[in-house]
Image 1 (spheres, one colour):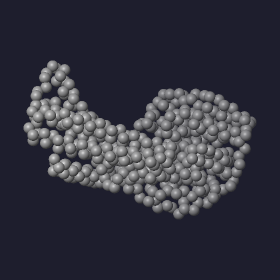
Image 2: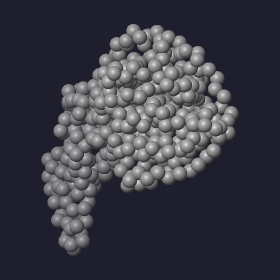
Image 3: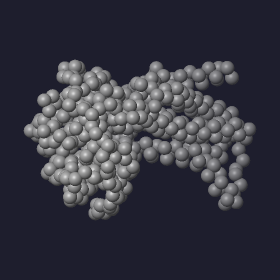
Image 4: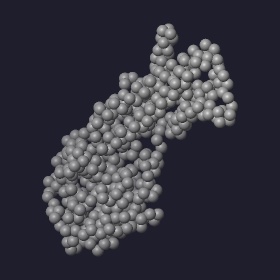
Length: 496
């Protein structure tokens, strides 16, 4: 028995090394390079004082709820308009990713209305928009429909009516601005200007660094993301920006872990220059997060004032003396494109692997149940004492495989939520990663010891019945598939 345990240990070590090698050698490789920062971003000029001068936001305003026909759906909206006489500048809030309820921007909309700007916030469509499928062209159509409705008001100045887009909305607003001259200006808040996949990958990597997460978590996420196929992840926003002719105000926060803001600014200025548009203003606000707030609380100093002064000052404010100013941003790594997964690591193959593993775990008991339901007696076998412990091993292997899958999904979900909410919960990330690695190694040991037990039983004269053979092949084969998948997702690589 000691020699047997020694051989099993050696076999487990060899298999572990083989699986670790799989993780090291298979593509896609991903190693973002340090960003070579343009000298212009290393010492930005201070934002002009006129842009942040105090704004009187004490005026009275009216509130009107309306609906806008968007073709295949109806969009609810709220208009807040100053009660002071005359025509006023106006803007439409184009929301970021998610359900996009209009209440999200109530504070900003009311403040701007008190400052003399008509605002409209609308509920994002739920028809033909979901987690996996997003049509930015369709969302731009919605924004233009809402803007057209706003321009009909007698208290709105049509020449100073524009769009305000945040995050995902900053991919939508330029499409609308490029299509219609009705868009008199565009405000881009936390605009990635790189593909959604590059932005999300960079954001997750930045957050993992802040969480002091193990290096393997990055490989796990990158390989998982490379297998995801969504129609919008590789969207290129540069063509729309090149066709944008209206003035642009872009606002970034130096405390935003979700946007590669230096590359985003360079992409924006490059696209506008190619299109011949020099009417742009880029401002970096110290400490502001993705929503222009300080740690999710109050708005960053100067944000609302900059926005209001720029909009009410148009067209004079369209082309500032200094295009880029504010707090100095620090971006350490490039926002690299995630390589597409090879065919054997695509979503379809991964789904098939998981299905085959699940079938392997249940096919033995199902085969035995079918025989009993047919009223047939299970054939006797020699060495009947061997099967019960082998069957217990198989049950533990099935639970371990299920636990590993649940743990991986839970960790990925947790990392995504931490990135969005900017929560510094590194102990939870570390604990989750350790659980996954331990379950992966446990599954490997269970596979090796189960194979050893089956081989030993056969040598002792065990003659399994057909359902038992089905269970042996199904469980060992299913676990083997899971081990190969775990190896691809770097769960066996060193260091931990």
